[in-house]
Amino acid sequence: MQHGKSWIIFAAFACLVLLYFFSNGGSGAKEQAKTNDSNDSSCPINLTGVENIPLEECKNRGLYDMAVVLESKDCAACNTIKPVLNELENETGVSFLYVDLSSSEGADWAEKHGLKVYPAPTVIINCEVLIGAHEKQEYLAALERAIGG
Image 1 (spheres, rainbow, N blue to C red):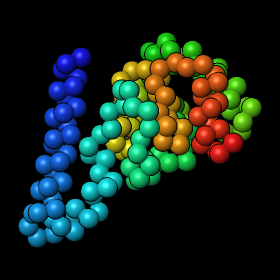
Image 2 (cartoon, rainbow, N blue to C red; image 1 turned 90 degrees about the vertical axis):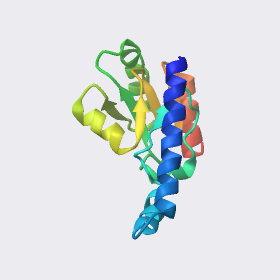
Image 3 (cartoon, rainbow, N blue to C red; image 1 turned 180 degrees about the vertical axis):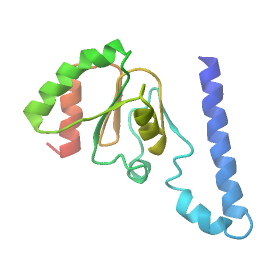
């Protein structure tokens, strides 16, 4: 686990160095920093134990107002939660976007949105992150918070 923490610290430091460089750099760099500093998905969010993605960052990454399931075809827990999420889709009318991270399209989707996810079901509901398999009530509560009900 120590290796994972080192990587997170390195990634955060690299993001700060890049932001500093673009905000203090030569011609055109300041303009580029204005467009990249708040929505730079080149610095991935490590979804390993986060409870929420900060609202502005979530909006800038195109994740706001979404219900997304990040899964993998070889993930047993992912297959366990699918029936639960299908029930919730039928009961609430909310549709989940299922992204298979084991496919190139799914990996591209996660990269485009600046997410780094380890093989486990990861559900993002309106910027709230639920990692691992949860009870139906926990997903329902997140959906209710998202729609204000």
